Structures are given as C-alpha cells and as structure tokens.
Image (cartoon, rainbow, N blue to C red; front, side):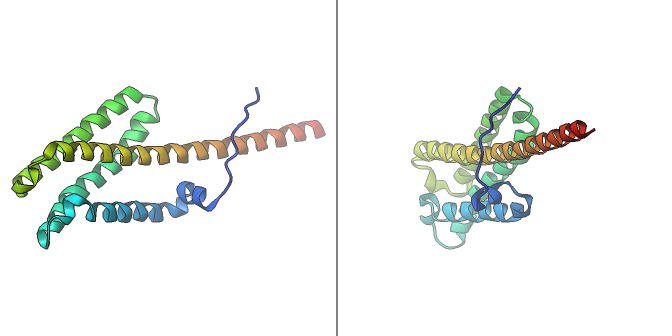
Length: 168
C-alpha cells in the first residue's frame, strides 16, 4: 500500500514550531505575546497603578493555566487517544469554570467594572476559544511532523533491508 504524504518544506518557522531545541523559546513567545495582548486590552487599561496589574493577573494567570492544562493534560490524554467528544466536553467545562471564577473575582475585587458583563463574557469566551484552538493546532502539527519523520525513517530502513536482501 502506497501513501502519498504531503511534503512540508523545512523552514525556520516549521523548525521553530516542531523542534525540541526551540521549546523554551516557544513558551517564552507564547507567554510574552499573551502578556502584551492582555496588558493592553481595554479591560486592563481602564485601570491605573497597582489595581491595573492586579486586574491583569486576575486574567493572565487563569488563561495561562487553562492553556497549559490543555496542552499538557487534555490533548495528550484525551485528544490524541481519540476521545474527541470527551475532550471537547472537558475543555468546555474547564473554560466555563475558569471564566466564571474570573468573573466572580472581578465582581469581588473590581465592583464597578461589571456593569456591562455580557459582552465582556462573550468576548472572553471567543478569545479563550481562539487561543486554546491555536495551541491545540500547534500540538497536532508537532505530532503530525514527528509521525511524518518516523514514516520517512521507517521507509528508509525498509528500503535498506530490501537492498540488503537483494544483494544476498
């Protein structure tokens, strides 16, 4: 049986996404990028001084926690094992609980900021879903690239063995 595989060009971006030696840089890029986006979001810049940073960390810490829970627990244990429906349900519940906890913390510590909560909550869901889907896509791409590399190596070994058999 012959499989035609898509050939992905070996570019710097692909290597950055897939190679282990760039792992720390990938995480730093994710954390700093998320830091910058959240720090200058509308919900954060309306505050000044220490309150601004407190509000920032009430948002940043749970978002980072849910991202890493998804990347290192949910994707390997559920998604990669073919339990897609369970993965989606757990991810939805986890995201909902996280957003509710963030909302409760915001109501408790920033009472004046919750006057128009529905649009903020919907915006939060959309942003969280987008970031989670991007990190899941990166994990899937990494796995696909590793599997493709293994297939190439196995085909090479098979060809070498066939050549050795023909020589004998």
